[in-house]
Image (cartoon, rainbow, N blue to C red; front, top):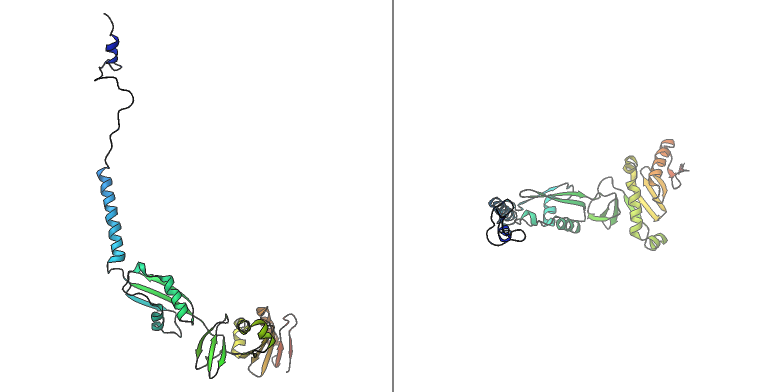
Length: 266
């Protein structure tokens, strides 16, 4: 028998099956697939959850600021802190600006040294306050100005707190004040007092500041200590402690050069 003609070969697949219609060149066109039903359900659920979550955070009354709790106050009252903080009660918790609250408290209440504001879900805002502690007092007429360990004047009080020494700055015409400024000298005095051991602070009545490198401590029992500058204050404190033990009846101590401390009767 005669083999298939050329025309017949063109209408058959390899293996002998005829092709429908004309020869096709290249792969058949792809059909667009619609998203699987499971994927559609997942996307819809995510949208619902996102919208619902935003509504809960911003639109519902479930997570709104309703109370303020204050911790760490010693002189200030919790109510004073709460009023100065200005927490927007009734607002959504997520919209409460904690940084702004902290800044507002530091600006409005000078007695506050540091503050940390935190959310206490679902309805509370907590304010943890650290107050400044006076290490020196400055006379201001019949009142007293409290000074902390950084030399910051933060409050004026009618009654002097117990066991807080006075600071005596020289007049504005002093060369030391003109050169370094009263605030710088006040800071030096505060630094010295903050480095003193507790037993010496207990006996400390006042700090006399003549210049940057001339500070004198006045102690109970008519004793005085020539301190010099605030440099090497920790070393000077150790030298003074040892000197007082070695010469308990001395009335005058000099630790301005801590490697060569000296004591005398007066």
